[in-house]
Image (tube, rainbow, N blue to C red):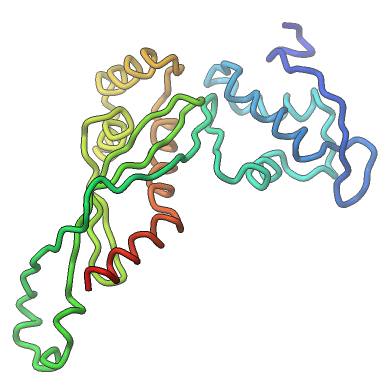
Length: 229
């Protein structure tokens, strides 16, 4: 570790060209190697704002090169690097068949004659227990939730058993609970994952919420719904 290389970046020769065809540019594969170091290198919170400029400076990434983050997320769209952690979405599993739910009509609907001609099937609602696997720094962590489907809309009810689910409920409370954060970091440490601060936990939870349902899962669910109706 030196003043010129305070984060122990690994040397890498640029091999690619960007749109402006300048000499000192990196191919997306090179940028992945460069940027993935962010989750391997411990960076003190007070230095987070200095890390990316240091990264660009060490590798002499010029102004013609596409933004580091843009290249990475274009090249590995299924992974996100959040501070010193990398999170990636994995496979899904439907843990049971669809369960039909009986919904009580709203009071306003009971009195609305315009609903008389609507097919009762349109109001069908279903629930199904699901599991989505995520990886934090390549450590596999399950996320369990109950999916409620009603027409074209859905919502999720997260269970509270595994680490990711506990992180979800911790973030949902919105309180800066030091004991709760300490408990989460204790579990992370047991998995070999470095500690997270509050912003990192919130961003992890945001990523999980945005990625628990994907196109493949929707296609499977639609087939189940078609068979059920």
